[in-house]
Image (cartoon, rainbow, N blue to C red):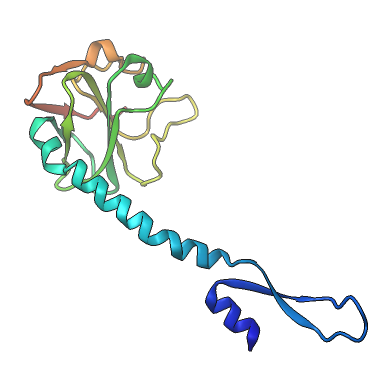
Length: 187
């Protein structure tokens, strides 16, 4: 009974061995329970969350950002999703870094639409592929040729090579909306 009371109060109770054989067993509060510590930090975390929301309102960022709308056509089926990634550098476009932002959008009527909101002005390129089996990667055959449809922002796709950032980049001005029409290629 005393052990359960200690757990409710936030202490872990252990039996202490008696120093002498005549002493009875006693319970000692040794250290605080982890659950008690996490419950104490919960109100503090909620306070930081509300303070962050008050200092950085979402509406202020939405007014100053630019937008990219990518319309994908040429999909062979309505299965799976369309994976669309926005890149801000040539290194990340080649796979030597991370994309600026990625979206998975549903396919409807053999087309898809992705909208990137709140973007800073700059130079970008979009890469897209139709992930028919929803395994989060572009499937290729044994020779490395894509089995799923793929595309890039300016539809400049070399026949025997991967698309490049230089061929598919575009400028995004501050506060503007850029609309891209991307036609997927199937080999």
